[in-house]
Length: 345
Ligand code: TXA
Ligand code: MG
Image 1 (cartoon, rainbow, N blue to C red):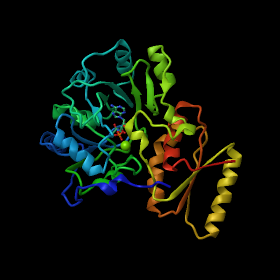
Image 2: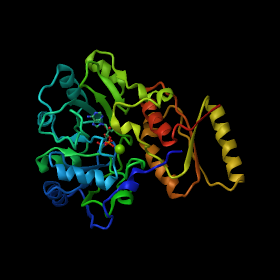
Image 3: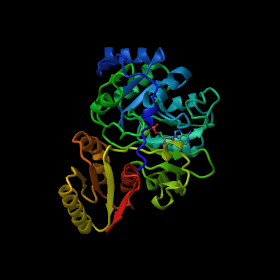
């Protein structure tokens, strides 16, 4: 089922001392010092925890790829602490960009724009565009502001593992591999930011999140496209966000998504559970209330890690309705986790 973790290619030994830091002024000061000397610090955001490095320091960014075991063509998101700092990475803001920034920052919207030459190619995976966002978390904003630079940060998990929504998840994956972890609260949103490509002629969503196409359309008054590869039937097409092509979020267990009317989904999951338990398999079930999209987004990755922790062999997950924007975003993660292993009832 293609469960290769790229983390297996990680070259960094996991035997360094990782400082566990809290949100105090002094601890944030230590995290700032680590960033300024080219080290790596994980920090909380409202979406998922990030693994930060100085976005303009090539050696530091290189270490991010190593610590995560991340393929080098998968670009990082550059995080800033004030809207005006977008000028560090791009030179011209269209009226649409200004409107989106006014409406959604700080918050879970990442904008892809043409990059300035000062942004190293290693940060953008060799692309001439850069992804940028201002996160909505006080610890993250203080870390970035006091570091005096922009912070490149992918999600703070080993590549291929579910994204971390609790400090404990970061410790499981990265303790011993990075310089510090800033502890914060559990992430409020729970899935990663919406990635919106504003670098081409038409705005296009490359990764769905809790900020939906409809909300974006309302602000810019234009139709927003969705990358073709996001449609489950087109999963063989190359996605435009390089990171979207890799095996993602994969639990250690086999995973199957059961799709159809709710009552039948429920019945089929029960049946599959019984059959599998009789075969001696340990079974995990993920079944959210059908319309509880926000809650599903908040809990999904944590549930995957929890079931892995229990050592389940197989996970059966009930599909959510696709139509709603946030439901679509959660389903994108659920289908990827299951390697598009779908049963229709
Ligand atoms: O919520 C989030 O976005 C979290 C927190 C930490 O901010 N970050 C995050 O980063 O999810 P990461 O690296 O796991 O995902 C970044 C996504 C990848 O799919 C990557 O390919 C895409 O954004 N991306 C980054 N730069 C891009 C670019 N210039 N063009 C197209 N896609 C890009
Ligand atoms: Mg990620």
